[in-house]
Length: 234
Picture 1 (cartoon, one colour):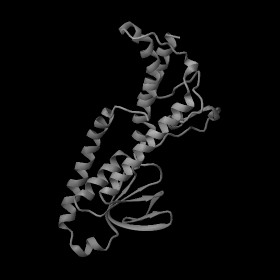
Picture 2 (picture 1 turned 90 degrees about the vertical axis):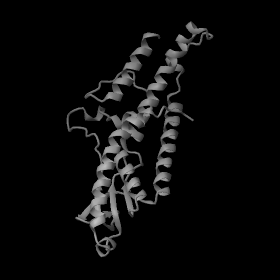
Picture 3 (picture 1 turned 90 degrees about the horizontal axis):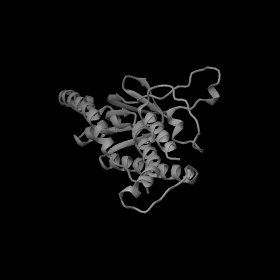
Picture 4 (picture 1 turned 180 degrees about the vertical axis):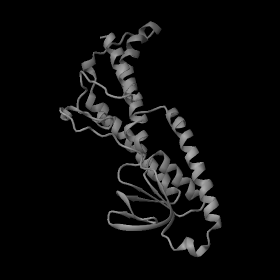
């Protein structure tokens, strides 16, 4: 199983913690002044749409403070960071660095070990990456359930201010947090069949020999930098 340094989560957590504090401050002020009759006419006190970093943390902490909470997510828990961002990016970077580290190790007294680029088993790496992401998805789900957050799997939409519809089933909530994040869009231009998004890049069946990057996505610059560095020792 792949291992990863979870320092990235600390950085993400700082911004998410601010969202959680704001949510709880508002939640406590409003719930404390609400009468019991108003509170009990809804299915949930707090309904979160989106199971990314912000939605997961906000729903969990609200539940820890006694609220009846639901979280709706149509995909895997963890959002961009866990599934197609920080975590897989780190794994990709680690994979690209091992060959160089083995090459340099002989200067530090280790036996000479040199690999060729074609020695790398891309399919095996992607399978291991997917297994690590699934482990994190399962951990997120367990933590939510352990804190009495009801997970509703499906695409959520509003019927009215207090009614959310998920797969044709209606749920009501006094307060709703929209934490859906965003997703990349491929423009309708000539040659779009050759374009992939940052999400797709983590699931490529083969490592491309050449790639053009449009945009300033930090984790792709890291991957490209490592790829160039590897080519220098070929």
